[in-house]
Image: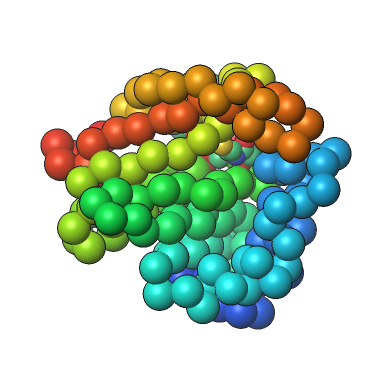
Length: 156
Ligand SMILES: CC(C)(COP(=O)(O)OP(=O)(O)OC[C@H]1O[C@@H](n2cnc3c(N)ncnc32)[C@H](O)[C@@H]1OP(=O)(O)O)[C@@H](O)C(=O)NCCC(=O)NCCS
């Protein structure tokens, strides 16, 4: 596992996050996560936007939003040249620990049904597929809703 520095995103990180999100999470569609939306999330006390750095380079980010009893992962991506080195896992473990600390009992997220690498990634972290959401994305692709309890362990 590669050593990364995890830190809360600042407004000056928003452009890099929006650009990575457009390239890796929303390729080929009008981006839902525009610069101004990412900036709003960074300022929003009900959100936690975490970035991963190697040296000074932003190599990954995750954006979590708190709901009543749960937390919802809205965005997660790791730069292609740093994937499969444990960066995504470290971001998720940090967010899960933070969410648990704030009283959330479960974490949910949606993932494109065709994104098999991400589905394998979430499966390795103990997320279960709880629902299929037809035509969820703008290009009408279906989404898989995933969930895991935070009460057992945040680092499994
Ligand atoms: C999904 C994503 C965030 C994973 O981040 P990552 O840093 O590469 O993942 P990690 O290295 O922490 O992987 C942890 C485990 O997940 C599983 N995993 C991760 N990527 C995988 C892949 N492409 N294929 C199969 N399993 C994978 C493995 O079990 C891996 O452990 P291992 O390497 O010891 O076998 C990254 O691939 C990414 O940014 N993808 C593009 C954006 C995206 O799809 N975001 C999610 C939208 S819902």
